[in-house]
Length: 254
Image (tube, rainbow, N blue to C red; front, side):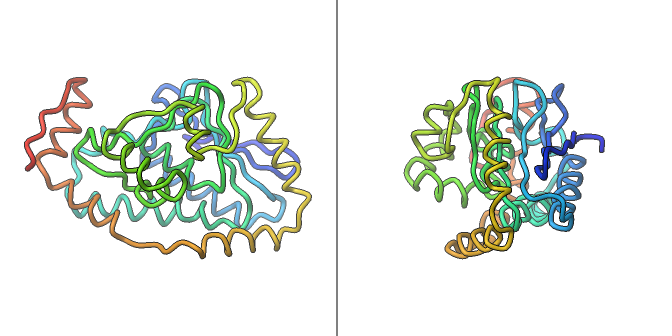
């Protein structure tokens, strides 16, 4: 695979997004390859649990690749969000085998959404979380408006979504976004130790936990509809251009 590094540790598959020079940003190739890898998890009997992480120490996933946004209109934005949700994010959330996010460094935008799609999260002390799409004149497109309120409550989620602010690992632990914070050097060993325990449990019962827990939450398509519509706004074009040009955007409400 071009963008993923895969390794196997006693029935646990470790998937590392491997674009450290781009802070592991999500692009079309990453989404396609993640979809392929997660599909194999469903079908491979040797895999009993999964850890998703990022290569290097700076980022889990620092967000989407904004350079791919320029050519998108409303239909293209909606299609991108729907494809990512269907092939990766929802597939992870509904995976019958436990999927843990081991968050090292920045987990922003699509990276935060990828971590939230996992069944639970542990973080290194240098982890940073945020949904900064508002700075691009957009909203999250990969489940952020649905999963963040579930995990940290509506008020805190609204604040993060409206301000685009980042929170550090201790705040993420306090909010309930992560289960545990570890030293940077201990992150993978801790994640593997948790999976070693999980791997001793009954696979059908684990699958039942996922199905029953997820059934408590209703899904809706509002997020992808609005995400797509915003790509037809001048503010979204300005937001992406300002990001790539490393300047502050000037939004006009159009």
